[in-house]
Length: 121
Image (cartoon, rainbow, N blue to C red):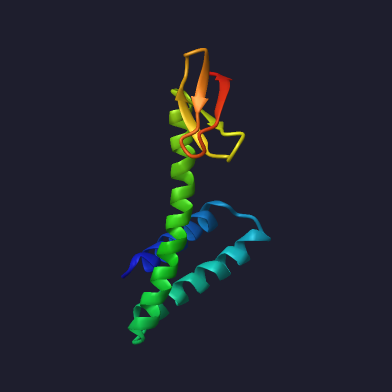
């Protein structure tokens, strides 16, 4: 089973768990339908003879998963680095320049266009 198949399997397990513990009349049939659709999709992918098509589907899934994980990784990086550094945008070209915090007023030199500007860290 590839990564997309594993994701579908875990999603179906989560839906089964939700349906077992969340008993809402309107939501329960909908979750049951999603469980059944997920199981059918999972088995259809597992027993498919068209390996090339399944490979392409898995590659699309991996690309989307990469974009999502990279977005959250960037947020985490900004949060952890934000305590140590200040990021300024150059008024000339828009280049981001990272300066350590706690140095007071500093003259920042843009490495891209050479503009100097003064900011407080």
